Length: 180
Image (cartoon, rainbow, N blue to C red; front, side):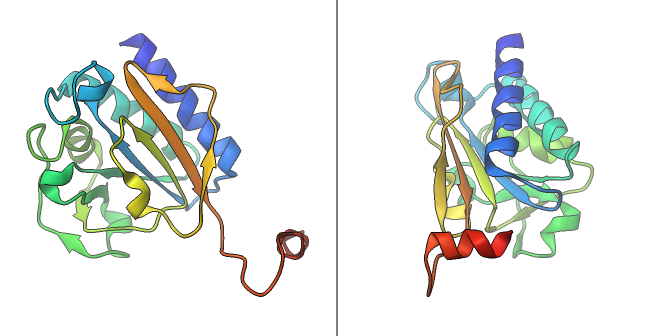
């Protein structure tokens, strides 16, 4: 369990750095605890691992003023668990995730957030996908891969992304120079 905690902490910190995340931005995260333990996604949820992952991510992001949105599994249509303060930005849905419907990570988030709410979708600034949970639908356009130093948590593959505004009517160099 310590290896999982340290791995999650490291990838969350790296994502913040590599993506240049700032306070007020949102990270969408999906995680299959089944995949972490070597089983096929959705077949062997592990509540203890879900809690460790949520608590670790929540602390890393909260300490930086970044919001965490935790994706539920397909049984809840990939809704997301967020803090109530951010829920008003999105379409709220009536759902309470459990390990069997929503997943262990989402259930841990619902029980761990101070005032949880579920929303139908978001447009996050960055994302972490642990175990092939397909969080891409919740990222802003344009998603850009982020290569992290850790590519697996347990048996689950880790994928990360950041987003950037689309380049419309100019070049990347012109866009970058306007940021300075």
